Length: 474
Image 1 (cartoon, rainbow, N blue to C red):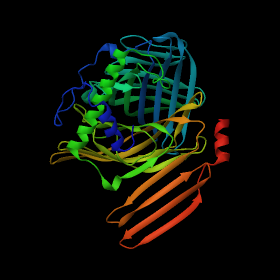
Image 2 (cartoon, rainbow, N blue to C red):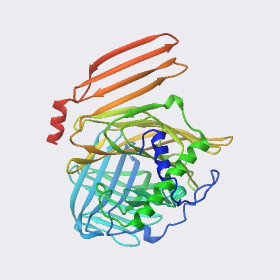
Image 3 (cartoon, rainbow, N blue to C red):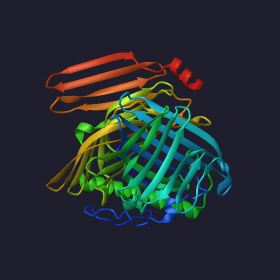
Image 4 (cartoon, helix red, strand yellow):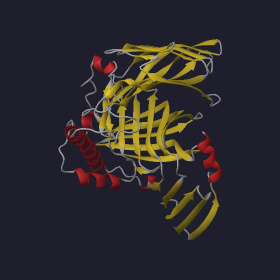
């Protein structure tokens, strides 16, 4: 869904006649972040399509080193005719750590049948997967994560600073459409953490900040558009799609946030989304989701950006994104955005941020037929500002970049890119065509000012038949 704005407008024309489900909130009002939160939201919603609990922390060891850690408990159930199965599914435990001094990362993943090793309860966070655990009720939580492959143990306490917030509260009252179902996604985007990390037998005291989320969905990671569903449910889901699309369109029309220097068009064969979390030293936080229809497109983004000052939340539907660095993953013949510049507006409020990845990226692939689900994560740092009228707050912090992609196994990378050359650098355009099937990249450059420069070049590109055959071996 993150292509150009015109794609979103076409979608709106098709569904414009449907009723709207929305919470009426003005541009100047913060979102009511406490509205729907209950103990039921804390605990499991088993059985459902997919549900996860995620705790991400960035911290300093008592020797001055900086590390990051991420703990994920997840289960996904199979569809059994007309409902989610309670006896057939998969569970996942993933523990990731990063050493910011070296950029190295350590990744542990265990996959099992569900019900099975993963246990969870109603009305509270009480998770256990072998000897890794997470427990608590807002605002106090504890986690113990054991990575046996890399001999790393994390034993921490997490205290939420922000109140819980349902993502998408403003456009759809906290329900995000997903295939023929919907997801509810609540976050506590800033908290304090303390505890110990034991690295290959050596223990260190740690202090830092973190982010917690809980997502549950009447949907599936792979086949949410394929399962049977009733007309009434389809009508309700259509209302959600209509509401969130209209909200984003209105937000962009009202705020006119288009940045011509960010404008870039691209087409590719990879779909998914980019997800960023940033915790700022000043007590602020940001959670950013931009949907990805074809690949890395700069310019107007389709998604939701949530900013909090620790007490209030603002949801931005009008923001521009520029990818300043990307990484090529040869084993899957694909590109991932690593660094971002983002500008968002809402009334007289403006949020800007630059995110820079500083560690290597972790990779996880789950295959389903000819389609793969790829999840990636890198730690980084950020700087930005929040402008509210004449008042400006400078922001500095750390965070994570978590791209997700659906990867077709039978397609080579193909992309077409178009960039403008704009003042003060001149006027013109650059067009590129990459085809890894042939292993070449063709570039056309036409610059008219301050001097005329017309250039055409062909050069080798990464990928090609040999690289694609190697990806099948994985």
